[in-house]
Amino acid sequence: MASTPDVTEQHAGLSNEQLLDMYRQMVLIRNFEEKCQEGYTRAQIGGFLHLYVGEEAIAVGSMAALRPEDHILTHYRDHGHAIARGLDPKALMAELFGKATGCAQGLGGSMHLVDVSKNFWGGYAIIGAHLVMACGMGTALKIRGDKQVVIVYFGDGSTNGGEFYEAMNFAQLGKLPVIFMCENNLVAMGTPIEIHSAVTEIYRKGCASDVRSERVDGNDPIEVYEATKRALDYALEGRGPSLIEAVSYRFRGHSAQDTQKYRTKEDVEKHRAQDPIVTFRQQLLNEGILNEDQDKQLLHEVEQEVAEAVKFADESPVAEEKWLDPQSAYANPIPPQA
Image (cartoon, rainbow, N blue to C red; front, side, top):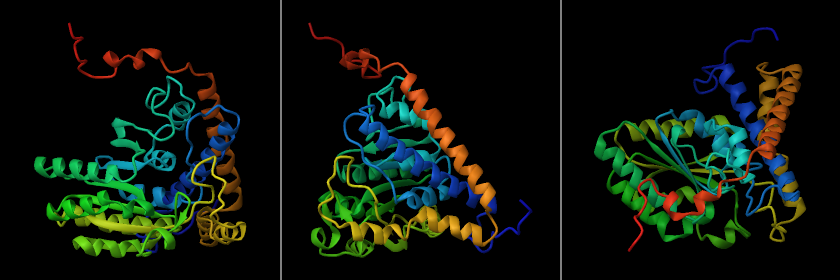
């Protein structure tokens, strides 16, 4: 491809290479998730499976604004965040397969991906509880004087629970370096937002604790990046937390077993017309940052990477049973009682 003008000024300080990398990550997440659905159907993946299909721009855009030293907590729809943070797809797929080569040695599964080396502290299955944990981490960072930030991802349904208001209030009181990233996909499990929340514009809920808040298009990775960068700078200046509401839509059900009776096919198709990957791809093509040949090569490489991840997971040994022994589950085991 012929050299193209750098559009750094046009796209929030992001170079063409960074934009292409963001696009590749979004495609990788989508392909990974679709393979997970196949694996679940074939009983290669057990337990629960919550796919991130349709929300890729949020994880990719926000992670691009973070630094390696920043910390991440997320909910149980966590595959996309893990990939965007740079976790190895092979280790992720192996974790979903319950294999010893998984990022949590096959013990966490789909909802509890983790990589301490990347400050990726995992997905959490108790809705809203990790918001309070983010405050704990933020408090530790402030006490130690570390110039780091915590970002915590959660869904729109979490904003109806007491933990949300507790965390927002506590973070604002202490001016903690926490970014609250609400992924508003318009449906909390099987309940449309206009039914489960009296306030449907989630960012307005930040006013209860006077938290700096804004709403962005969650289908636009650049817009999400810009908002996250503003929140990051705000926190590093010691000014406290921010609430970002990124409005998006999940194309799959709440979980792999969801019958989706709470929404119509027409509604899903309407939102699919705003598919963040398709939209971003077209933007890059229009601006000469990507061409058709590059795109075909990128898609091929991603398919190969995911296929290799599935092969790796399938051929890996199962999780070791020793971890089922409580004496092996702690760094400092509790001595047996006489």
